[in-house]
Structure formats: structure tokens, C-alpha cells
Image (cartoon, rainbow, N blue to C red; front, side, top):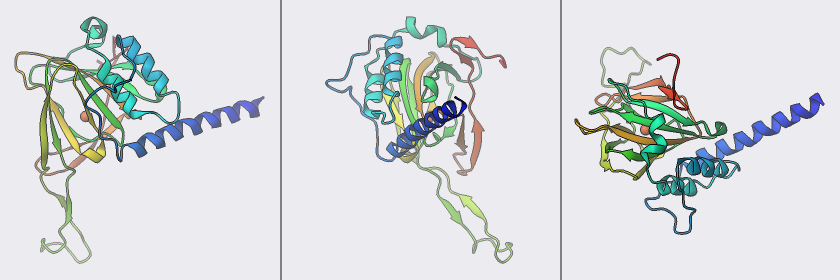
Length: 243
Ligand SMILES: [Fe+2]
């Protein structure tokens, strides 16, 4: 009996590992789709979206185009997401909506007037960002180019190397309106997201797969990279204990 449950636990780990490996592999070529799929299912509301996502992630080979389609197909209805939208006066908040059985994280981000993120990566995961209210501006950057300046610094001893980075290069800027979906992964670069409005708040729905709780932040002028933990302001509509 013990042996049997141990075997079952092992096969569960295998399945999860396979999906994770597969999803990371797909980040190498997937670039996101702009329009819903012609014959894709129609999402009626937020709970429909969540069930459809759960069924999409129930197999190893997740159809990432379908995930993108589902995010596009949902039409923002504040009545459905209001309970998750918790704001802070000083910075944008991350509010967990669904933990996707450990396969994906669906969350709502609330942006006060003028709030913005740092420049960050996405820990080798897929990131979909759908506007629910207001507007957000996304600035994309290329990864910092590192240079080994062995010859340039006179005071370095023999064999010593000094690594520095150049300022991050801007790849483009996009402003997103309600119901639009943006997609990014590490192969497409880094980004910073901000609410450009000083009079209106913004709300966005994010899906990350595989989920992650650490990522890297980057300094714009030096390209310096810092590892950071990401936390939730609230979970399932309830404020987290540490806030
Ligand atoms: Fe991001």
C-alpha cells in the first residue's frame, strides 16, 4: 500500500515536471496572438475563464495559443473582478485570483495614478497581461549586454576581471486599452509597466505559467540585475496577513 502511494506520488511529480519543461520550451518560439482564434470557445465570464484555464492546464501539452485566446475572449466586467481589486496608496498591488493547481497563477494587479513597476524579467515563464480597466503603458527593453573590461581598468591585478553592463536599450513602447492582451517572455526581452494617468486608476489581469515567486529587477542606467521575491497583497479576495 505504502509502495503504491509512493509510486503515485512519483508519477504526479513526473507529470508536473513534464508540463513545466514543455511550457519553458514553448517560450522559445511563442510570441503571442493579437486576435481570438476563429473557432475558439467563447468565454462568458470570469469563472468561465478560470474553468477553461483549468481544463487547458490539465494535460502535459498545454495549448498556449488557446490560453492566449481565452485571455482575449474574456470581456472585462467589473462586477466579476471587483472583489479581487485591492489598491494601495503608494504602489501597485498583486492580488491572487486563482493558483491554477500549481500549474499557473492568475492575478489582478491594481495600479494607482502614476504607479509603475521596475524593469523586470519573467523567470523563464509565459506572461499574459489583459487590461480590465484604464490604460497601461509597457516599455520593452533588451537584456543588458555584459562586457568584460579586463584591459580598460589599469588598477586590476593580473587575472582579475571586472564585469559591467551597459544601459538598457528600449525596444518599444505600447499603450494598452481595456480588453487588450499583451504577451511577454524572457526571449522577447524585459519590460516595465506603468499607469501613465495621473487621474485614473488601472486594473489588469495577469496569467503566469509556470508560476514563479522570484524574478530579477534591472537598473535602467547600469543594467545591474537584482534578484527579488514577488508577493501577494491579497489572496482570493482577502487581504494577506502581513499587510
Ligand atoms: Fe511583467
